[in-house]
Image 1 (cartoon, rainbow, N blue to C red):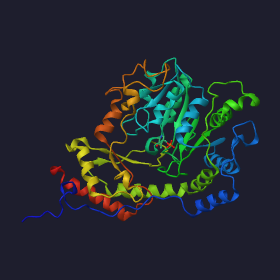
Image 2: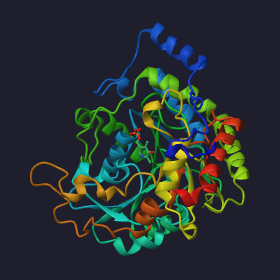
Image 3: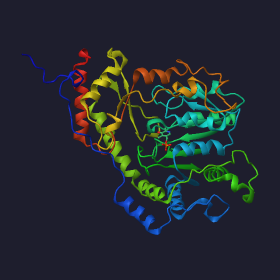
Image 4: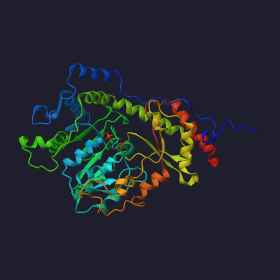
Length: 432
Ligand SMILES: *Cc1c(COP(=O)(O)O)cnc(C)c1O
């Protein structure tokens, strides 16, 4: 009987590897000590939503903010409880409201496009760059109307957005730029750090990011007035604007977006590790790319001229000329590989595409975002149908392959297993 020892796992053969990839864990002794210190001190959060010296939070929150501001060379850093909260605060701070429009990307995590809806404003989807995956400046200008107030850009996968071109547009049309830099801590463009490439930058410290505090977010801005408005929205502005003498009351019904002292203690330790973690990540990227040098199936990511890319994800582009179906190829490689330890339920960290273009979400398809009559999507001029952003759709449905096998916990032997799986499937692509 003929037995093929190299049979693809997707056809019932033996996987290239069974044992899990090593967990990516960034918190350890330093964080433990810092958290213990907070708990021993007894003050787990020290905010008051009132005109009071504790309005800006406790000592660790403030120390964390000073450290993040210094690291990035920002005039202001503000801790919040997530990037999601941070984006909502940012749009509030610049005065977004019903009738306003915000240009957003079609390809990112949902909040990068849905944040304007919280103010009854309309997100207007622009397309992305075919090779860099950030908002395409050429796609933006025709979408600008007299109602456009801002552009919400994303440094997707860790690639800084095209700041020179988008800033020029913003200047010409008097628009603010909000930068979602959740995936780009430590990235930069022409020496300027991601987070400060727009008017307000928003980092995420959720568990999945380069560095994290479990949940959390950091806002950066060099604008004193915006910093004050952000701090108000973060902490019950409505109770404070009176005694503080704030005259512009737009969006000054605040939230509770406060970070605790515990998370701030962790966020401070994590920032100190960022440089080392990025170096390790870049080593993995170099090794992965060198191992697949000349591979015909897909090409390696481009980095914008003058940019430092932080590679939250390593985005590769499928070679359409192979005639092989990308989805089937990815499915077959996934079948050969294990999950990461601690993240077994998330599946193998390899994807055909990333997340569907945001306008495929039910909120846009059914044009329902808010209760009552204030629903900016009802009269939206965009149809939210297939073809709205052809580049994002082509990347997602046909060309992009995203993976996280470049996280610092991956050793060269782990990456070798990934490469073996890719080569095994490639060699038998005619059987897919
Ligand atoms: C993770 C992420 C977010 C959301 O961050 P949270 O802190 O979980 O709210 C937003 N945008 C992008 C691009 C992200 O990667």
